[in-house]
Length: 379
Image 1 (spheres, one colour):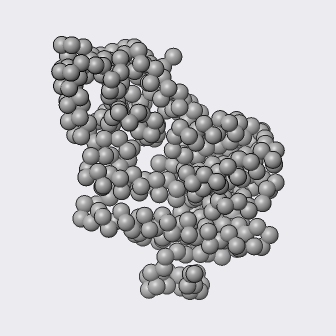
Image 2 (cartoon, rainbow, N blue to C red):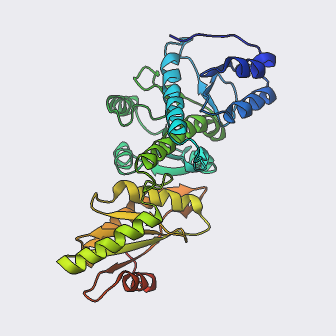
Image 3 (cartoon, rainbow, N blue to C red):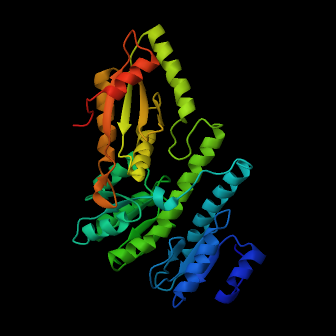
C-alpha cells in the first residue's frame, strides 16, 4: 500500500522538501510545460533517485518524467509501474550507503542508454533517427534477430514498431514477460493493436510522430540505464575497486597486475595466451563505452580486459592461440556492428589487432607487437 499526499503545482516544490516522498505522480493532461519542466529538473537533482510519473501525458515529456497512460481508463497497472521505479530508488540508496565518503562515478543515463528498435515498416528509418539522436540504437528487422540481440548484449529498452502481426507481437511480449531477465525492460508499442495486459510493468503504448515516440520512450529507457549503471557500481564496490563501474571490465591497475601474472605463468607452464586490442574512434565516446560493455558481457569467463587511457580495450584470451583469438575478436565485432549512434555512419565497429605470446616475450614486447600490428580481426 502507498500513502498519498495531494498537492497543486504551486505547492509541489515545498511539499517535496517537507514530505520527502518516495515518488511523485503528476496529472499530466493540460499541465503547463514550463512548470512540468521545472518540477522535473528539481526532482532529477535529488538523491536517491526520485521517480516522477506523468499520468496521461498529451505531449513530449522531460527526459526524467516517466509516462503512464491508463488503458481504457483503468489504472490497475500503475502500482506495478511505481514498484518498478521504486526498485531503482532502493538500488540507488544501497549504492549511496555503501559508497559513503568516496563519491559516485559520473552517471549519465541518457549517454549510457541503448535501445533495441524492432520493425520493418516505412516509419522505421525515421524512428531510428529520432531515437539515435539521444541514445544508441540496435536495429532488428525480425523477432528472431531481436532475440539474438537480447541474448548477446545489454539492452535498456525495446521499441516495437510496425511490420508484425498482432499474433507475432503477442507471442514476443509473452516470452518477455515469462523471462525474469527481461520482465522489467521498458517496452514501447507504437500501435494500439494490443492491450497492455502483460506482466511487464514498464510496457507503454506511445503512438504518434517518431519524435514524440522517442521523447516519451526516453524517460523509461533512461531509468533502466540508470538501474544498470547502479548495478555495475554496486558490483565494483563489492569487488573493492577491481572493476570499472562504467564497463564491468577490470580497472587498468587490476588488469596490469593480472596480465603480468598471466604472462609469467604461461611462459613457465606452457600453453597459449593471446591479446586483442579494440581501438575505437576517439571522437565517439558513446561507441567506445558501448563496445567495452559488449566485450565485458560476451568475453569468456577465463578472459579479462580493461579500457586503456587512449580509449582502446585490451582483452587477454587465456589458453588461446592466434587463430582462435582472431575468431573470438570477429564474433565480438559482429555484435558491435549492429549499433548506431546518431547518424547511421556512427557505428561502434573498431579496428582490431591481435598478438600471441611467444617463448621469448615479455609483457612489454607483447604489447609493443600488439600496438604495432596491422592485421585486422574483422573481415
